[in-house]
Length: 122
Image (cartoon, rainbow, N blue to C red; front, side):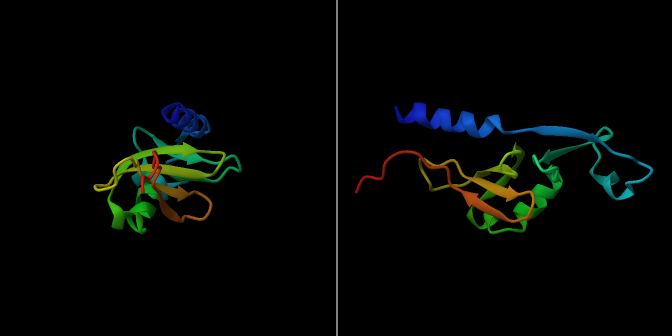
């Protein structure tokens, strides 16, 4: 039953995810040229229109307290509704947890969400 509830929760969280491709204007956005991959930049965009590229999200995560807990993986699950980019992490010693470094697109802040399952038996 707990696995079903966790699966439904995960499905709800991921249903708000959205990854967009934005063409790079090479004439007007020379600042973005180094982020271009095949003339497009993968970005996470919120419902309010704010956006953050994968490279920017990784830079924020790697400068945050997230890296004190473990390594940040290079993939972003975007939640446009909450305005967050969820970067999975490799962390040892936390059985039953699947941590992510959650980057707020609007504020640029990052924190670890442990995403733990199961009961703690005393």
